[in-house]
Every structure is written in structure tokens, then in C-alpha cells.
Image 1 (cartoon, rainbow, N blue to C red):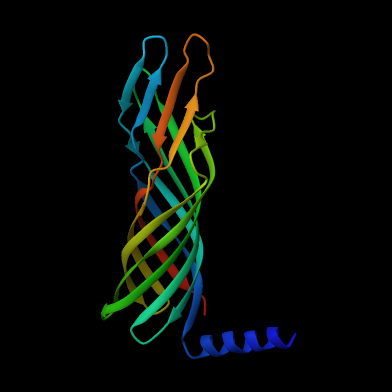
Image 2 (image 1 turned 45 degrees about the vertical axis):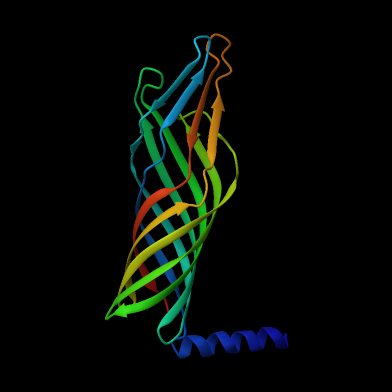
Amino acid sequence: MKKLFLTLCLVSSLIATGQLDFGVKAGLNYNSIDDLNVSGGFIGLNEDIKSDGKIGFHVGIFTQFNFTKLYVKGELLYVQNSSSYDDMLAPSTKLKLSTLEMPILVGFKVVGPLKFYIGPSLVYNLDSDFADLFDLNFERDISIGYNVGTTLTFNKIEVDLRYSSGFSDNVASYLDDIPSDGLGYTINTRPNQFLLSVSYKIN
């Protein structure tokens, strides 16, 4: 009880002095998901089908520790991206990915309301829909990425633009179990996305 009381006092003190901020954020994102590779079958196919990226969205919360010129920001984001493929081998095939992302960002003030930041991110694959019917098998459910971006701060409102990607590939695959087909579908799901969001500081 004493430790809890001291922790609450510390948090209250940080909020009162402007050293700790917390709030919510939401926005749009565009993810250039990799091409779809179709291979196998009786004739030994091996073809890449170009992806057509779609606009997705993200929502989440954040906590930010402020120092004189620097700040450290932790976020928890739900991110949804989608892409489509249109070819003889995959007519109007769609892919939807849902991830939970946890960036830890270190930023500094550049001039006026402009800030710059960079930091790693933990990405967890929540769900996937392939061809509106099948789930993909991921090489890894958890991967490590990075973020780099800028922020414009206007009192309690922040406008954030960032680029997010992964340090390594994360291949997702699906094997067609139809005997006469036997095709395999693979996609590198490493994120290469731009996120535009608006944040609101609650305190």
C-alpha cells in the first residue's frame, strides 16, 4: 500500500510539473505490402503478382516523459492494413492484416512546435484474412521494427507523420490443399508504411 501511494504521488507530481503526458491518438496509414508470390502446382509456377496498397487505420494510447529538450514516448497501437492483388492466378485476391504495435520513441525539439523522433517497435500479428477466407501462417508472430518521424505540437493537439518498417522479413504463407492445384502463396509482410495521426493529450 505504501509503495502504491508513493507511486501515485510521483505520477501526480510528474503530471503537475508537465513532465508526464498521456493521451489518445488515431489516424490513417498506407502500407506497401510486398508482392504475392504464387509457386508450385503441376507446371512449376513461380510468379510474383504486384500489390495494390490500400488505406488503413490505427488507434491507440500513449505516455510521454518530458525533459528539457528531449522526450521519451511509449505507445500502444492497433493497426490495420490491407492490400489487393489482381491476376489470372489470384483474381481480386485481398489481404488484410491486423497488428498490435508498441513503439518506444526518443524525440527532441527542433524549433518551435516541430519535433523529430526515432525508436524501435515491437509488432505482434493479431489476425490476417487472405482472399477473404483463409488465414496465413506467419514465419514469426512477433517481430521488431523501427519508426522515424516528425511531430507538430499545438497545445494539447499533435499532428504526427512517421515511416515505419521492420528490421527483417516476415514471410506469411498459405498452401492450397486442392490436389489438382497444389499452389503455394507467400507474402513478405514486413511493414513499410506511412502513418499520419492526430494525438490529444488528456492531462
